[in-house]
Amino acid sequence: MTAGGSAVPAGAEGADGSGDEGGKGGLRAALSGLTTRGRSFLAAGVAASVCAYLLGQADLLRVGLLLAVLPLVCVAVLYRTRYRVAGSRRLTPSRAATGAEARVHLRLDNVSRLPTGLLMLQDRVPYVLGPRPRFVLDRVEAGGRREVSYRVRSDLRGRYPLGPLQLRLTDPFGMCELTRSFSAYDILTVIPRVEALPAVRLTGEAPGYGDGRSRSLALAGEDDVIPRGYRHGDDLRRVHWRSTARYGELMVRREEQPQRAGCTVLLDTRRAAYQGGGPDSAFEWAVSGAASALVHMLERGYSVRLLTDTGNSVPGEGAGGFAGATQETADSAGLMMDTLAVVGHSDGTGLSASYDALRGGNEGLLVAFFGDLDEDQAAVAARMRPRNGAAVAFVLDSETWARGKAPGQGRAADPAGLMARVPAAAEERVRPLREAGWTVLTVPPGTRLAGLWRMAERQRTGTGASPVDGAAGTSGGWS
Image (cartoon, rainbow, N blue to C red; front, side, top):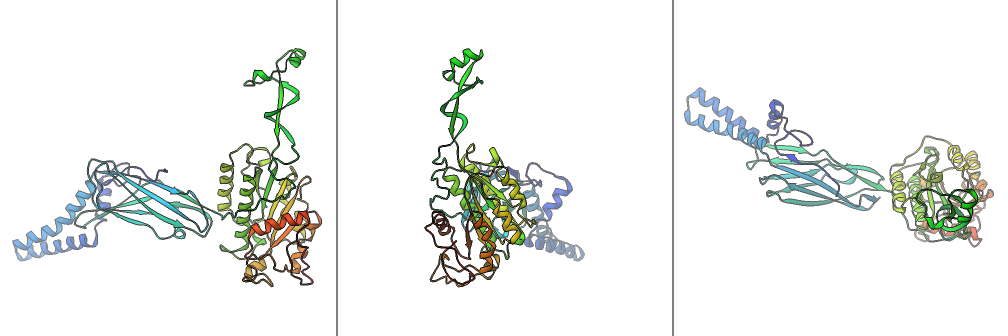
């Protein structure tokens, strides 16, 4: 359970409810909480008292004083009430995919010795998540608690604050209402939608450890014949006595373990590479595709890093910025998802920064999601292909996405969008990638990544459809 607030005294004025400011400022704030009914009673009482004084009517004066004093007494009683309440909030789940619902659980505890009066509970929620939830609590006994919940949903990625929680206190006559706020709030992270991908071989290796059984030095695994110096914490059973006698110091057998294959997911975020916006835009498809790819590769045992066109890698921990080998898979995926939840367009115009980031460790599998590529950027992207690995590119023609329908595409006849014709200009732009050995798939609107993922395997194994001849206007599969 995440804390959504602390104990709040009903009469305190502080935002966090930790104390009573008192004085004229607090009393003035309490008077400002008079409701329309309370102000009407006060005005009527003052008017009646003045008229009674001028006319010499004692009975009318008593009525006027009663009308004027009643709302003031309610203000004083409500202001000086000393019961305390504590609030908390719990999100289920704390990360929700776009379009999916999350439930927010609110808990209110009365930690004072007095029962509360009528309370109205309200949580501050950004408008993109829905209307502000309000709950009326009739009475909370001393030491009692109340739990309520509401649902939120967003079609837009992002990090949205929930809270602070607000309490509105009122007297039994409805003369005065005071609002008290907790100080704490929680963050709901709306992550891109993740699509389940089929288990295919894009590198010729099924598991993340690879069929080549390559090895790297570590702390567990099979023995290596080359010993090393003893380190604090080494198992004495691994002492290599022959080398110890030779070198005159403790030597232990070196160990090794299978080297985990690496995968880099490259996301092109250049503003100039995409047109349009909204949940169904080309950029949102690319972000969702990158999220699906990195989660899929992590689940298959790969060490994965997320790289953008700016050259920044996420999470940036471990060798070469890869995560998964030394970190828990769930933590690695969560960190990358948090980044993708708030990723936006970059102001860069080229892919040189990402090329420089890949040049240092150009091995393993590279999965890239590109927007529009001109001749220069296609040449830069072509040089990104790993020396010892495979490269798969998903290229989105933003002009086609902005129109909302691929040329020649019939949604009813081909809901997967895998038989759409690729414009000749788009086909020509990606030709340098194919010539460099990339597996290139152009993405029309409405296409599911799972189908393209299978076609990437077919193209690599030579069983897929031949490249589309856009100039000739033929309709076929993906290249």
